[in-house]
Length: 101
Image 1 (cartoon, rainbow, N blue to C red):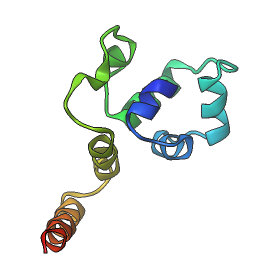
Image 2 (cartoon, one colour):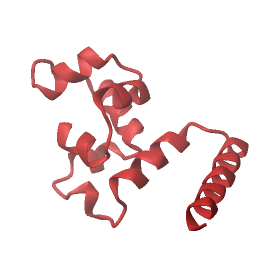
Image 3 (cartoon, rainbow, N blue to C red):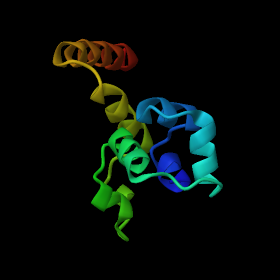
């Protein structure tokens, strides 16, 4: 879980917030001090936007060309409404234009 979190470029705090669990509990799970329930693993998978089967698969989930920043952006956008996503898109487009100047 820690490896996957690192690949997504997330801190424990960010993942715990997305998964709606405490940072302390997530840390205990990552260190092997606690065994999460299936419900908790499901919350964590939902935060990563992956299925339970993908989480338990032997194949690497980071096999895509998507980098950590893109994965983190996608996770942040996941909980926004379509209108909010459009606003963020406009901000990004504006930022890219400013960078090109």
